[in-house]
Image (cartoon, rainbow, N blue to C red; front, side):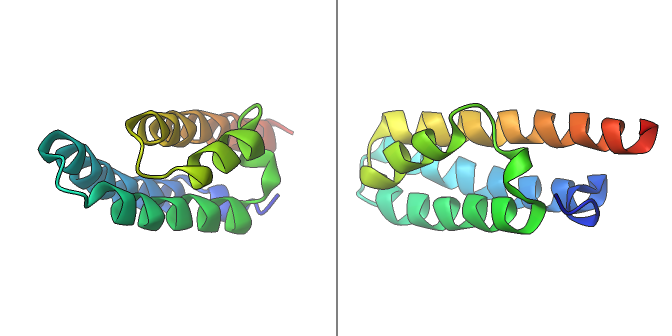
Length: 104
């Protein structure tokens, strides 16, 4: 695990980027304009970069399986919801890991 990569400031920057993408993906699904799949591709790359930089320890339970599900059909609304959950759970997990590092 890369302790510097899970610093609050770094994690907040990743999630600020996700928040912007998430709003665009949500709007694309509402509009059913076909843009969601491309935006999801960007979001998947963002999540993958986060995990690569921070380390596999930040992945939630079944994170790799869930990511594979998302990558298989990124245009589906269910995959968007699943990616949103992965981001939320990863944020919580990084906070717990930061606490462990500072206490340990």
